[in-house]
Image (cartoon, rainbow over all chains, first blue to last red; front, side, top):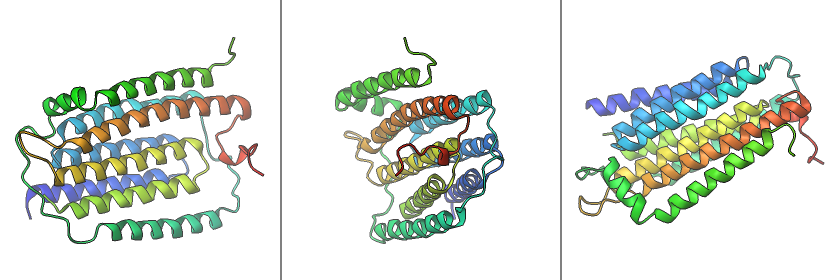
Length: 167
Length: 106
């Protein structure tokens, strides 16, 4: 087995274990968000193995560097604790969600049966900033403009939601 | 490199973990983090399939990676608005328990 395949399986196990750690951790929200960081970093490593270099860098900068820090900031700002959650009729919800999860997983895996072609050799410069940037500012320039509008409206919406008195 | 089926399998597993987390957890912050996990799983599928059809050196086919950039943008916007909702919910109810938000429930 070649090195990249071994690395892929290592990072895959890391991503799944830390994702489970995030979902199953009912004690500590800070630890859950740190597990999410581990998942993001493992996914960034897998992106590098898939030769999507720019996306890997952006994944680390935006997800691990910005989004999870925002989560941590809110958790610590609000001093959240979860031990006062009353145990309700949770087993039914958990059982149903588990059943649904297994069903969806089987259906998703059925979609990707055998018949995909072999992984080809990538052309020169694939996944680098140059070709991605050329595409972004020629064919997809409208998408960039729409993304800027979306971010602007998200900023305004977050401000209005979090502001104490709107006057 | 491993066959892309394994990449898509990892993506499916992460998606289902996120789905179960979003369905069962009652802490609003963990639900938001589970949604982030689902978006990441979709990104991984996009990158895997893009690696399978990378185009040529003259005309690279990087559409999957452009999609991933847009998904990351949407995720950032969603987190900003979601955390604003969490802050205003803490102000009004002093809790992040999802079961206390029942105004729209019959």
